[in-house]
Image 1 (cartoon, one colour):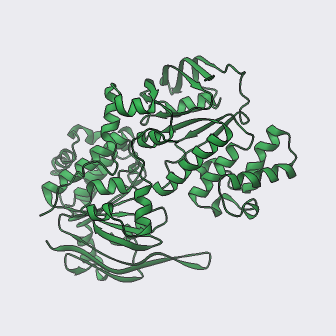
Image 2 (cartoon, rainbow over the protein chains, first blue to last red; image 1 turned 45 degrees about the horizontal axis):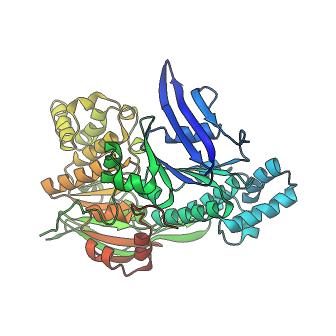
Image 3 (cartoon, chains in turn blue, purple; image 1 turned 90 degrees about the horizontal axis):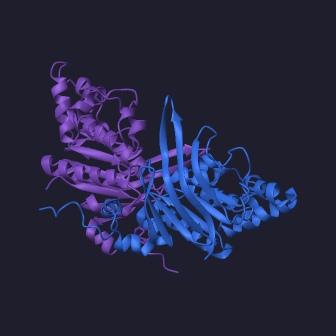
Length: 260
Length: 259
């Protein structure tokens, strides 16, 4: 197992008016090549800030301390890291065709001309299991459903063949049926491409169904990190236990009693 | 047990680019006193449109709605205003549903003022009482909506809905945007309020696991139609519709990844 990223004592703060708000507080962890690591936490836990810091997308005004070390050399943003966000209608450009936005990454990073990049975009649309890729190339985002748009966003994220795919709440705005489809797609893609997956979510069950390891974040701090089975089955952390207790699935005792 | 609300053959279509799309198509269901009916379905299945029809935010093209024995769709003017007190709605995002700059006291006090339920002298006490019912301290009244947490905001939205002492609250994805711990608290609060007052709910969500936790009966929607309905335990144990089966299969379970 080789290390892809070593994060050491990483802190990030944002200025808000006259005060500074800590979004990440002295976080240390390693991410292994080819693993599926889930980052879970509630609002304000710092999980999205970690994703932005890894992808080099923090705003210039963010104050950053500590180190992010890439043993294989620093990544080229957009080429070596693909990123999928929660809301595909705001991450896709509404006035560019589907073909243009997927081909863009291949043109910029793989040195393809637009014709070859278009071919690649068509292949990628087929990879993310969208029907009729040829005519989809000419479609605009608003013509697609939310789930279809997220498939397009995933195709665009992997267009330059990144080694690391970061999915930041990528299924949270989707209904449960589409969510399960996107999770299955991500699982298949990272296995076929040998990508490392960083899956950021507030849903501990979703994390457990996809990840090899789970890192639990709370209020800017890493609470614990471990094998998914250990976090779900044997965690000693009270916060992890509270997340597990608040989880609702089809085995949770109903809150209502039988009615007379 | 008597039916509080009876919907028969409700339909609503919208025009989109010259084509009429049926958002709700032939929906029939009922809600009893003290009962929670869960409405669950994928995006675009028509569940939000159905919720809006019930509170008359939009009017049905066809069908009938009876509430407390009266023809809800025929009500106009004063009679409609009086009935609006009896049916309230809570939305997914309280920051969008409520004025973020308004104080909590204004948000909860508005329905009291509009429906003349408390004069200006009696209003602070009524607001404090409503805050207490949703488990919030009376001191929160002076805070602005944008200053409080998401879970507190949804409690305020519920307190506002309770202000007119409704018999039915329609909750449209009311717990979906909350953190898991806040969500668990809101669901528990809804169940407690129902046990106290015998209020009925229509609980709309895309998440069948959450619907199962608080609903006595469920209706499954797809493409504008109710494709399956029945007691919750029965539908979950043996779903008959393809949509019901798909919704149940899609619920993630707490388990390590297998492959």
